[in-house]
Length: 212
Image (cartoon, rainbow, N blue to C red; front, side, top):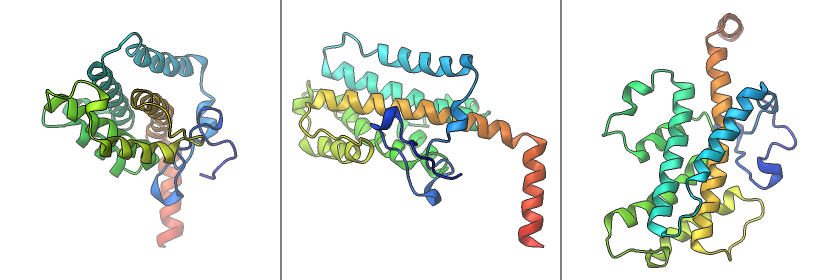
């Protein structure tokens, strides 16, 4: 896959691109986005429905819990798109959010920056979940938001270091969720291709040319 101009998401404000050796989909493949209206609409609707859960929430604890949950759902959607039988292990309580995200990352299918940006959100969520005295983002140790800023600088082409902690969490969640939705389409197309005779013929020809 050759990197194409305009590969950045969201009109150039997000950059999930990586080196070609780091992921199968190291940038957006634009032909993938030229899908049926219904498929694209489903992706847009899915994103909108997830973000809608954040509307009207004022409590920081509730915000971080919702952000982490919608991102976990987004990771699971990507895993399900590539691994049709993922549902057989999805309900396993031993399969944590961290493990799901790492599983998607080590498959090297999508840009690692997309998954790396989830880690600080998850860690901030854990601070709220395990420490009762933490009632707002202001109560969270600065190192967790420094970690969030590090990842935000990697994915936002116009990084604003001066936004508040709440805005940083929500902004990052929205960006990563958008990336997950876009690359879920890529994984769906890849899985479909792997099941075709065209892929088997191409693979056989590649092996013959390479190893004979």
